[in-house]
Length: 389
Picture 1 (cartoon, rainbow, N blue to C red):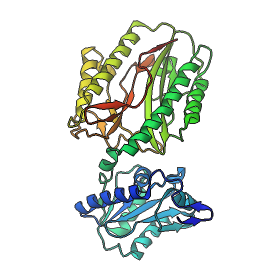
Picture 2: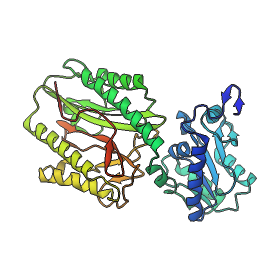
Picture 3: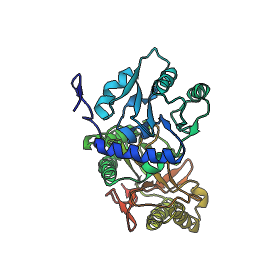
Picture 4: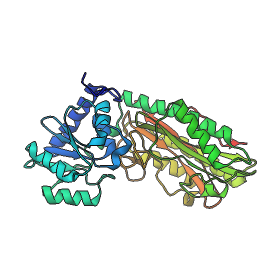
């Protein structure tokens, strides 16, 4: 095995070289079917899935040049080179310096490999492709095929090894959520609560995650996507907790609710409906069902209870490989009305039905699950009912 300056090639890779070779081959088959000769891959999730390369430094330009025929080339900043060696089994890295224009450098690599006269594809809808970079590439390359959706369907269906990584992340989440529940008490603050959650998940094994925990208390919990802000918890108040953990960049997430004291009747009713809606969605999961069916089942429970106006979102989303700013793969697949993609064994989802009265409280419950040959498998182990303290 190649070693460079004490760094062994692939020594920190999440999978074997054979696994990545298989993923590239499957991607090449889809590129060929789309009439594309070379794909420029810029999204960190797709790069990781294809090569194993991971770094928090994806804020600087990186790209995998993946030809249908021939060896791939990785365009990378010099500072990230040894990360690349440790995480991948690719032998060909094209290294640019901080004074270089990375787009000009990439075009030079395409020219050097004789690929400028080939049909070139690019994921034009990637989060990490700035408009200025795309426009500069287009000005230099001319027509560029849109290869968004070439890799993502392959990522949506996880292998057994990928599911095991998500299941491991779910165990980290369980540890974090248990610690969070134990840290809820009147007189303590949100920061102590989140510190307990993150500390326990990290101690259990979690790496850095794609998004921070969504934790809020009291009236602040009635605002979606609220985060901790030092607020002191009081008696007779709600506590909302949602977090993720990661293992080899594969994420699992979990949402739970608690109440210090006696909740009002409306909160208890909403929480009961969330529990029923979650189970209805889970019961609708089976191979061959569309992604819309679990959402419709969830929505029916909520509508029947009279809380339609309190639930204006998708029921769930794909989860797996993620980098900030998100812990999910919602851009790949959602459980929502009109999504006709059929569920397949190996697809993994976070399903978080929540109901709220804005500015007062939110209650909710979730599970991370994998689609099986007969239905679903829940990856977490925490009980679901509203925790009363």
